[in-house]
Every structure is written in structure tokens, then in C-alpha cells.
Length: 368
Image (cartoon, rainbow, N blue to C red; front, side):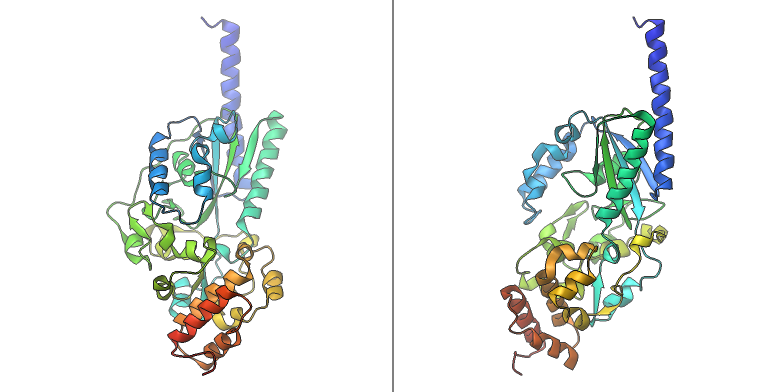
């Protein structure tokens, strides 16, 4: 039996952890996170792991080898960071109130559409800095504890842990959805050995809606909660390094970095709140810029103008590849044909291939 002294110590520890949990939630909002939740890292993840393995076995991850190589560490936090007991999940809104309407940009074929999360500063840097500040506040309160901060930076099932922590539910497009905030937000995590109070998950509210599945330009959402990344425009324009399959190029339209269609059509995103975070303010007019202008950027201009942007990580060559497809899908004009012809003999084989495809879309050759 537990002695009276042991019971008193246990009760005090529990009270302290409940109090600490409350403090952490207060601090997170002071640091600019709109919501925070805590889940049990020791909970059974066998169902999720089975689903992940099936997805990988079918090759739906494409060339994202990192999705496969980490194995069980993705679904078992303690195998990634020994001693992990809890996952602290946070979300931060990113939708800029000053960005031009997405649908309008996509309807103007000579404009470049860039996923709205990438219009400002790289979210990895913003969230990681804020999460580290949150961890520092915890250290100030309790002293040293074991933890690790994540912002899309390791094999973490961020949507799964966010769902378990009550931040929302997994939508049929596979992204996290919230009744209060839609899906236009970033997620981040802290793995910790602190036995904090656990939050309850929320119910799924997708119902019979299939709008996200129906609108996908390349039919990458092959069924509810099932994505074939090899067809996904976000994967093709960001993660995929080589030639984009020709049958998919016309379907990409003017989406040159990512794709937001499945989010834009989602009824829950009428609740998506605009951010007041200065780091996510539109830079370089990327919410409403012509394909021709962006295609004219030299490597030096690309590196300079996109310093601190998530777009910079794909590199200038991939950027030009994506823009060439957009130009091939645009309405014909002298500006567009001139821009394509200017890169007809580009040093990059990848760029040349996509430029020549684009010219054929306009019934042009390099010399005509």
C-alpha cells in the first residue's frame, strides 16, 4: 500500500503537472500559436502504422524515400526520442489578409499561383523559433527536462498527433481540419518526457462531403483519407526533382508551387482566420505576379529575392521547370512565346525539356 507521505507526494506532483499544463497553454498563445493540445505518446498506434505501411507498399509516397526509411520511429515517438511520454501539438494560422484571392489568380492563366502558405517567410524557421521559446519557458519553470522540437523536420506524424490532441480531425484530403480554423495553418510539435495532462480528440465532421476529392485537378486524392502523392501537384512542384510526367502537365495549370484547391473548396475553410503574424506577410508580390516576370529571374535574383522563403529550397532549376509548365498552359501571347524562346537553349536539360513542351503547346518551335 502507498503510505500517506507517498500519496501526498504523488498528489502534489499531479497538481504541479496540471498547473504546468495550463501554463504551457497560456505561454503558447502568448507566443503566437492559436491552439495547443497534448496527446499520449504511449497510446496504441498500430492501426495508423498499418495504414502507413500499406500506403508505402503501394508506392504512393513517390520519390519521398524519407517517408519509408524511418520505419517504426514515425509511429512510435519513444523510438525517435527515448523517454517520450507526451506530444505537445500546436497550430499557427498562415493565411495573409492582404493576399489576392486565390481563385482569381488561378483563373488568370498568365499569372503564377503559389500556395498561400509559401507567400511569406519559411514557416520552419518561424515555428521552430517559437517552439524553442516555449521549451525555454518550461525549463525556466521546471528545470531541465528531455524534449525535442519539430517543425516538419523529422519522421513525425504531425496530423495524427494533432488529431489525438484535440486540434481537429483528419479531413478526406488527409490534412488536419478544425471547426474553428479550417485547415489554413501550420503544425509543430514538442516531444517531451513530462507527464502532462492529456487532451481529448475531437469528432470527424467531414460527413458525406467529397468536395476536396472531386476538385483535385490531377485526381491525386484517390479516395477518402488516401492520397497518391505521385499525382499531387504539391508533390510534383516541390518534392519531385525530375521531369514531370507529360500527361499531368496540362492539369497543373498555373500552379507553380504547391496547390490549395482541396483546401479552398472545403466548407470548413470559411472559418479560416487570417494571420496577423508579420512573418507571413506577402513578399515580392508573389500572390499576384506574372509567369513571365518570374521566369525572367536569374539564379542570383531567385536566391536573393527568395532568401528566407520556403520556395528557395526547390532551387532555381525546379522553379523554372514549374514556370515553364505554367507558361505552356497559359493563353498564347507574344510575351509568353518570347519568354519561352529566351530559355530554349537553357543550360539545364530539365528546363529545356519543359520549355520545348511549353512551346509545342502554343504550336511554336524555338525559332518560329
